[in-house]
Image (tube, rainbow, N blue to C red):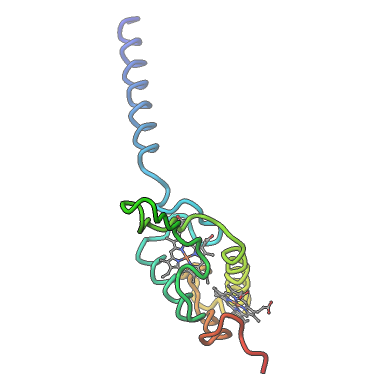
Length: 138
Ligand code: HEC
Ligand code: HEC
């Protein structure tokens, strides 16, 4: 009887260990520093949203994202990849704009409850920006 109990404890410990390992290697999402967009956003969805932002403001990614460090003395590193998870002032401004856009859509245009508020686009960046970093006032 005692032997049997020990065996059960061992089995459940092993099960727990397996579950713990599985959850630690399965990340919540691919991205490291999302404060507004859903953590589990699919990569394709994030990419298309970033394209929409770039087109609405008519800018390249590095308008909001920290540009890669150019290391002229290390040819192997000359074209370092950008780290899109880094923050800066422009990215923070853009986050505020995301909050504003989500709020407007959620409050005034939330007609499809199947869509997450972050993905509503009745009002979009382009509604105001139209290819300008700062929308014209007239
Ligand atoms: C108008 C500003 C803006 C532009 C232009 C922009 N981004 Fe972003 N990007 C953001 C903001 C803001 C976030 C953070 C969103 C959040 O906190 O939920 C972000 C997040 C990301 C992330 C997630 C990084 C992580 O791991 O947390 C990636 C990848 C990314 N952008 C790629 C791009 C690419 C590629 C382009 C160019 C095609 C681009 N972005 C253009 C503002 C911008
Ligand atoms: C309701 C209109 C409106 C919407 C929608 C809007 N913006 Fe803006 N945005 C503005 C205005 C107006 C300014 C200029 C604010 C100022 O002069 O300080 C601005 C400024 C910005 C700036 C700062 C530019 C700079 O050079 O300082 C960024 C970045 C930006 N918006 C990104 C976005 C993104 C990304 C979206 C969509 C998620 C968005 N905006 C949606 C009106 C809007």
